[in-house]
Length: 147
Image (cartoon, rainbow, N blue to C red; front, side):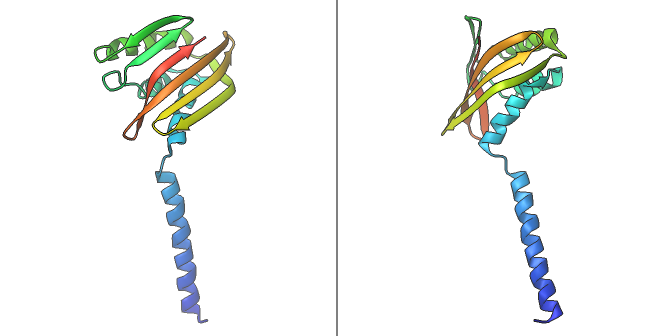
């Protein structure tokens, strides 16, 4: 085999590898989208992370039921700003605290997903459950429960 042909084959193989890596980087799976939400609510809590977590909510499209220690609030079409105020207010009271997931489960079944976490911080421990519904390419939070 001559040098030119080897160079073409090597170049083709290199291009194939580069394209494969680029496609893998560009394509975000459903699991990766849900894991991105989990990273918003774990680690050091900041306002920026809370705002990123809020991108998984859109009460006009997917109503959201939030239950905290047995008290439930439903956010619907007209309640997006109330949801944002409540989340940012709670976040400010916890800003800087570090939340670690002792236990984490992510289940995806078609257009539905569930995340269960056992979270711990210097403030204590809480069990959290999040139920997602897929709308197009977006996963939107439908239920959030904290015990």
